[in-house]
Image 1: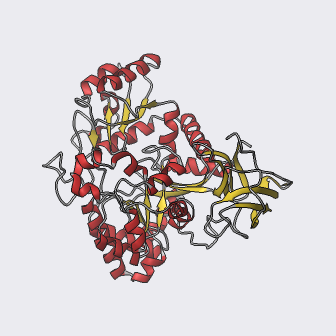
Image 2: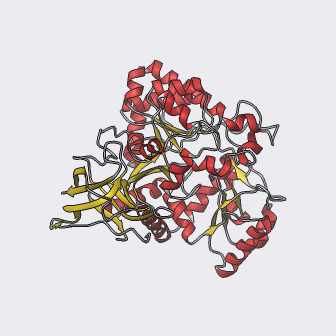
Amino acid sequence: MGAHARPPVLIRHTQAVDPSLIDDVVLTGARVLDPAAPAGPAELRVAAGRVVSVREAAGPGPLDGLVITPAFVDAHVHATATGLLVDGLDLAGCPSPEALLDAVAVRAAARPGALIWGHGWQELGWSAVPGRAALDRAAAGSPVYLSRVDVHSALVSSVLVARAPAAVGAAGWSHGPLTADAHHHVRRAALAAVDPATRRAAQDAFLRGAAAAGIGVVHECAGPDISSVEDLRALVEQAGADPTAPRVVPYWGAAVTTADEARQLLATTGAHGLAGDLFVDGSLGSHTAALRSPYADAPGSRGHPYLEAEQIGAHVAACTLAGVQAGFHVIGDAAADALVQGLALAAAQTSPGAVRARAHRVEHLEMVDTRQQAVLADLGVVASVQPLFDAWWGGSDRMYVQRLGPERARGMNPFAALRTAGVTLALGSDSPVTPLGPWAAVRAAVDHHTAGSGVPLDVALAAHTTGGHRCAGDFAPLAGRLVAGAPASYAVWDMSGDPRCLQTVQDGRILYSDL
């Protein structure tokens, strides 16, 4: 904590019937960051798991330099894949293909024959990407799965390919990084090699890390091409059994064609909605995002579409009639075209009002024009976006420009335009693509590389709190707020340097505390 910051005054008594539930707490003198609460020193009073009052307090108070926010909502995560990096190969910033192969060789020597799970490499600036033969030599017989930073391609060893024979010859097959369907097959094989104890430890590490980052709710974006039903169920069960874990909103990304099929799939998976990583296309980094015009650095490619407009429309209509959220992963402009066409088909089959009432969602939405923004707003679609994508890959000399050229790159991630059009924004990390860290996302949304595309601080904060609840279909007026009557869901922050979470409370339960 900073030299002048002290912990909040806490007066706490817990209910005997539920020791984890806050019964009486007073936080005095911190700045409360909520549109309807004082922006200066304030007193926040909580009782029986709800906010009783937020009122101005005299003087700077004992918490000068500390703030209280609503607990953050990360609207797009992958819990197991994130947690596996605690004991896996974190390849973020890996400087060369030689360094990657050396890391694999060291791990293979330390754990002969065991699955080597890694993530985060980017080939930008490398002389080449390692081929499978080189990876096999380093792996010395171990199965290896190393996802690119965007998780839409991976380097894999021959031992792992042998466990996923359907990958051979599938779309995206190569002797270098696998993409598209070939990648999905080997990813399933890699996840199948993760035993239940390792998975449980990974999920626990993720949940504890999220709580320590001031996050009270996460949206797990699961699906047959990214994880498994067993993985999703295990996460929901683990979080539900632990009163100190963030609340998990589970999504399953698989397409349906009828309302009965939607209801059956929801019952089978336990999902909140059939949304999240239901791929309309892939990613720009792996050259699989679906584009209207070819890639600047791959003139023969326009990416890889997975769903056509008719399939999108059928899914949205089925979910609308079943009374649940639909949603899709959409990155390229051609994918956005298919999304908007599909939404129009669903609205014609049901009604615009019926589609609007379900608050369907779309993930990423990196390339979207003004006409499409208007359609999304009119049909009540919520945009789950990741500001750190711009922070990492935007600008004049980074990945967006390399893949798209300067003109198309300038239009990426138009947060301000989406908001002006009336589209509700929800912020997330897509962890492990970018790390858990809500303040980094808020600042990236504000400090957009393209002038005029960022949003004000209060808008970004709202998008990472109330917007996250709305993205899950919760439009209750007090969701994600710090006002009288709202659930006690808040985070206390030391802002004297880089933001540091001191306490996270969700629905009246302390998830994390360093007070």
